Length: 194
Image 1 (tube, rainbow, N blue to C red):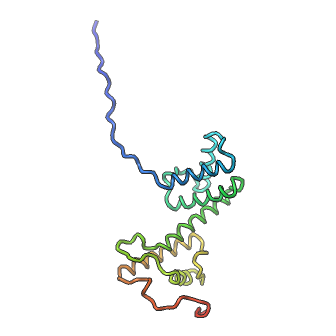
Image 2 (cartoon, one colour; image 1 turned 135 degrees about the vertical axis):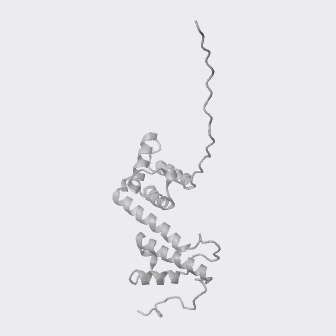
Image 3 (cartoon, rainbow, N blue to C red; image 1 turned 45 degrees about the horizontal axis):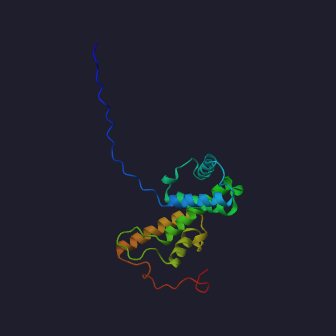
C-alpha cells in the first residue's frame, strides 16, 4: 500500500488592484434617491423594488441601463435634472416624454455652463469665457437673429459652444483678449441696427 502525501494548496497570488475612485456625483445621486424615497413613502419598500425603480429611470434616460459610476458629465446633468423632477412632482409624472424633457434640459444646462466657461481647459489662459455681448452676436449670426442664446435647444447650444471654444483658443494663440479687444458698445434697443 502506498501513501500519497498531499501538500497544502497555496492560495493564488493576489494581484494588487487599485480601488477605482468613485465619482463625486455618486454620493449626491444616492442622497437624492434617499430623499425621494422618504418624501414619497417608498422608504419601507423592499430593496429590490427600489433598485428596479432606479434602473427603470436610468434606462428611460439613456436607452439602456448604465451603471451610475460610469456616467459622463453630460449624463450626470441629465440624471440630476430628472431626479429634481421626480423629487418635486413624484413618480406619477414620470413618462417617456418626461425622460425626453430631462435629456434636453440636462444637456442645455451643461452646455450653457460650458459656454460660460469656454477656455477653462486651455493651458496658460488668464481670462476664460467671453463677454455676454460676444456670445449674443455669434448666436445672432449663426442662428437666424436669435441673440438670446440661452433659449437655444441643446443641439444649437453644442454648436455655439464649439464655436466659442475655438474662438477663445484662437484668441489665446494670437495673444489677444476677447474681453478687452473691442471698443464696441453693448447692444441695446437704441443701437441695434434692425
